[in-house]
Length: 117
Image (cartoon, rainbow, N blue to C red):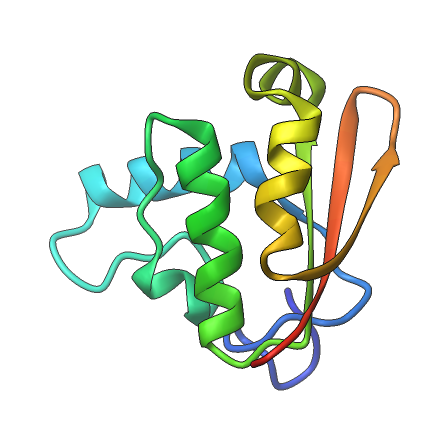
């Protein structure tokens, strides 16, 4: 769960979302529910994963920013980051605010503190 009183409606500051799991959940929910499917938190209601990971990740952070979330942390498997390019992904996230990349073993954690909410 996302925290007491936050049944998929908010994101805790210390929470790290799993990009691959969000994509998987989205497609599973799309195929198993007729209406009202979501990949998780409320801000994901407007997010649709894209085959292009850069566009998909950019859209994920944009949805969070537009929903008024202060910051977002997303872990992404290294294979995906290698495919799209860490520098290119970091440059995209620079548009949203201060960001940090942490090597977490098999994943990178991308953290953004949003500006101009």
